[in-house]
Structure formats: structure tokens, C-alpha cells
Length: 106
Length: 529
Image (cartoon, rainbow over all chains, first blue to last red; front, side, top):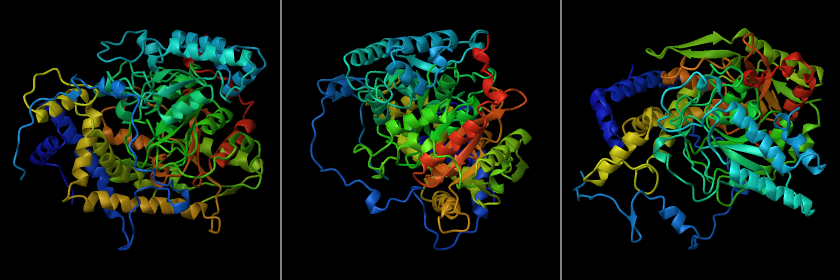
């Protein structure tokens, strides 16, 4: 069966994605999403064995190929100013943002 | 021949013999940029002029002063008899998806339009340590999301130097355009679905996607973290080998780089193809076409010129002693794009959450009363359509109620795609291939405006390159001729994990066999008198 992203589901996605769209953008993007979903349906026709594992990286990483984790030690940075100066609003050592209202989670 | 039309290898020779200084070499390339590039990509660029339509527009930022200072330092070292790196004095460009300390690092997006990177990506650092001179940052599709460069927020976007009414391909289109037009002999690109190989084919240059884990991703603004591979663009395989030599290898700052020794790529070039087993697969000699509305799949034949260029390469390699193995089954090739639509979107959505108008980058100038509103407004204004589309799709297919149907299924299909390669390359299997020979792209460079806007059709431009990204295996695209419209045709070689030396070797043999052919003497349109 062909799945479609309805206007309601689309609105919810936009909310979750922390985006805001005008009507024209919204219409174009929902149409493109549904066209992509139609192409993705192709995957459903593939018979997959029950025990077929997922691949999250193409190249296998046997132990001898992996790097050991580095020591978990604090390393002071020599470029704090270069980093903090990128913040759109920075005062007295703090990044300034608007109010963060307290909200009860669902 | 002008200095800017020489290969990187020739330039290092000229420098060492004292026949050209690093400053002269750098200046010659900056002069070429001045002559062919036109105005650099910028936000809110306004209307295109008739002149804009004749120019290459590879660059977003030209770092001329810094490049000349670096070149002068190379000349001083040379005069003092100090050791020079293997790429001393060789100019290169960097796709603007890599951070380079003190330079704008924009990802071709408004959301990073004002971002000055506080550190340098490992591959760039290694190029500079080898003595190479960075000329600037080149344009791309916004966040690498595209196959034509039209989606860049920095316009005018790059145009194909072979015909400026055509796209250069993407997403490393600024890289390939700059190399094809002689603005630099080398460029650093990235390949997530074909973004090095596809524009290399469109612009008639060599592009190598290394094995995942061969080149560090530290300092690369991430798209699909399990798929992204930085790699070289060059005008021939020798230059690509020199560049890969400089950037490959383990990096303590990227845990996914592999603890495997880097081969001597330059020595490998000369070994010839005698005895190598090179495969052809019927599954790569057709084009998948998906009806945009219904999703119906249809197999269509390749354009005849692309098919015959590929088969001709096989014949030439056979004449040089390679064994050609036909009918190698790669049945899951056709699922590469559908699986990619799912996997890459999930990874992109995850990677794009960090852009929020708070820590760096673009922040809305609208007054907002709440943090969530600041996020929303900044992202709405800062992201173009392509990032928005990828975020939304990534969130949909990974949502709890759909992830089994889409995301997990796509990851299992990825296992099947990897299995195709494992069977083809298995040294004890039926095929025992050293390399698989395929076309790089289903078409040559398409006209600007023809595909942009149709996100499904655009994605299918990568259908012959994306399976290697799913599997992690290396691939190279090399020029193999021109079509009847004078546009470059690329052929692709794919090999087992960490077989870059072999791929370069086969590519080099093909270059030698075709060195004197007429099409190699044709210059890109922007360089014709």
C-alpha cells in the first residue's frame, strides 16, 4: 500500500524538526517528501531473511583496525576566544538566549 | 603551456629544479581565477548578468593574500635548503564543507554564512603540512545536499567549464570546476553518495572516493556520518595519488579512521594491469528510473556513448593484459538510492540539530520571546529547502512507529549491497575481482535548471555511485572521452576495502593507453581562445 504523509503528520514533523515554513514551502516540501516515499516503497518488495543483520557502517571494524579510546582527561583549549566569539550573543562568559519557559513534559 | 595547466607532479618538479618559484606558481593560478571565475558565490547575490553565465564561479572565498604568504614561505625554505614537503608549492582548493582556521566555513548555507572556523580539518592540515598552498574555499550544494550545485545559498553557483549552460555536478562541483578550469591542479572534496565521482565525471577530471575510514573526517561539517568520505580531485591519477598519499591515514581525532598502513600510491601506479581481474556487471549497465508520482521502477538502457566508453575501456585494459570477467551479478545496486533516501536523511537530520542560532552561525534578527521560537525562526531563515527536506524525511523515517518499516529495513538492505561487493571481490570466490568497471553517471552534465526542484530525479543522478558509499568500498572516476555535445564522460572503478592503490593503477594504465587520443587535446570551453 502506498503511504503518504498527510498534512497533519507533516505539521507535526515541522514542529519536531524545530522549523517554520510558509505555505508555499510547506506544499513543495510535503509533495517532495511523498515523491521520495514512493521511491522508498521499492525497499518493501525485497525479501529479507529473518536473521539478516543491519549494517551501520559498510566497512567492518575488526579489533585490529580500531583505534584505542583516548584517555578521558581534561585538555584545556587554547582557542576559547575564537570559539566563544562565534556566538551570536555572548556576555560575561555566557551565551545569551531568550527565556526558556518551564514546561511539563507529556 | 601555462603554469596553471601543469599537473601537480610537474609543478613540484619545476619548483625543485628552480624553473618556477612557489610564488610564481600561486600567482599564475590566481591569475587564472581572475580570468575565468567571475564573481564569487555570495548570499543575496541578485540577478545573474550575461557575463555571470559565461563564468565558472567555483569560489566562495579566495584567500589570495594568505596563499601568496604560504608560497613565499615555501620559496624561503627552498632557498635555505630545508626539506620541502611532497606537495610543496602546489595550489589546491577546499570544498567549503571543511573547517579551515580563520576562514569563513559556510557549507554553502546561510546558517553558517558568518561562521569563521576556529580550527582546521585534518585533511587540510595534512595538505598544508605537505607544503600545498590553499587558494581558497569552493562552492557546493548547500550542506552537500545535491548533485548539481544549484542549491547553494551562495550564488552564482558553479558552472561546468566544458559548457557553462550545464551543471558541474555535485556536491563537490566547485572543486571539480576549479580543477577542470585550471584554477588549481588539486581540490579536496567529499563523497557521501557520489559527490566526488559524479562531478568529476561531469567536469572531465579524476575523483577518488577512498574507503570509509581511510581519510579523517575531523573538521568536516557532517552530513551522513556513516557515509561521508573526504578525497582528492585532480586532472590525472598521478596527482590524485600524490594527494591521497598526503591526506590518508589514521587520525587520533577521528575514531573511525582505520589503523591500517597507507600504501605507496605513486609506486603502485606504474605496475600495469597484467593479470588483474576486472569485472563488468549487467546491473551497472542500465539506469533505474522511478516514476515520481507512483514510485514505479523501470530499467532503461544507458546512453549509448556512456555504455560504449565503458566497454571500450574494458577492451583496452584487456589488451594490456587484464582479464575481463563479464556478467558479475550486483543485484542490489538498484536499491542503493531508495536505501540512501532513508539512511542519509536520518543521519542528516541528526547532524543538523546542532544549528540553532545559539552557539555559532546565523541567528534571526526577529525579536523572539522564547528559546524554542529562536530555534525555529533561525532555522527557518538560515536553512534552504534541501536541508529542510532532509531534516523532515529523516525525522519521519526514524520515528518510533515507522523506523522498523523504513530505517531498520534500509540498514538491512545495506547489508545486501555490501554482500554484492564481498562476493565479487572475495579472493576465494567465483569472481575474485580486483576491480569492477562501471560507468560513473547515468548521463553527462545536464542543463542548469533541468532537474533542480525534482528531489527524486536529482538523487538518481547518484545511482551508480551510491552503492559504494553504503558498502564503504573505494571508487574512482576517470575521464574516458567526450560525448557528441563535447561533454566529458566518466568511467568508474570500484575495489575492495583499502584497494585505492589498485584503482589508481588501473586508472593510470587507462590514461597511458589513451594518452594520444584526440579527445584528450580538447580544452574546456572557458579555456578556448
